[in-house]
Length: 149
Image (cartoon, rainbow, N blue to C red; front, side):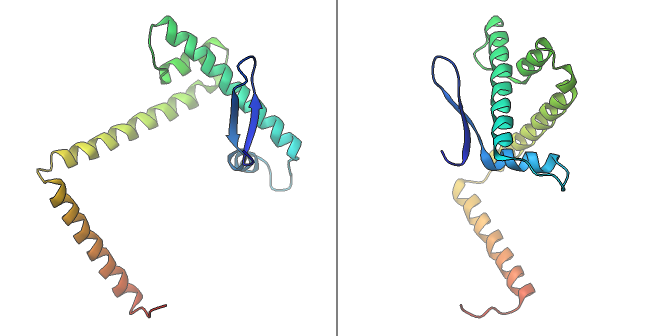
């Protein structure tokens, strides 16, 4: 995996990694423009991120097991942050979780809207094709006649 920062953990030799491009972008976004970050520093930051994720998810898993749940959810992550002393992250994590839940509900509403539309799959596909054709016509009329390439 040349495009990921890899790290191995204890006995099971699990490979955990983060995409290099993502780590690099986060680092660049956080740093002033006049500073650069050495590759070794990026590697260390990526290792720290993986370790932090492992720590939080391990604690969340223990909380989940104590509650006899099989799936870790956002509440378990929040409880893990509190347990481990990362209270300063709670507001941001809670805000992100609430935004995610809101977006998930919106997606569910859109899916339900299609189910309750009363149209068959074939009718929906035909309506979609008509919308695509209309959009194509609008784009062609705005850009003028196009010559073949």
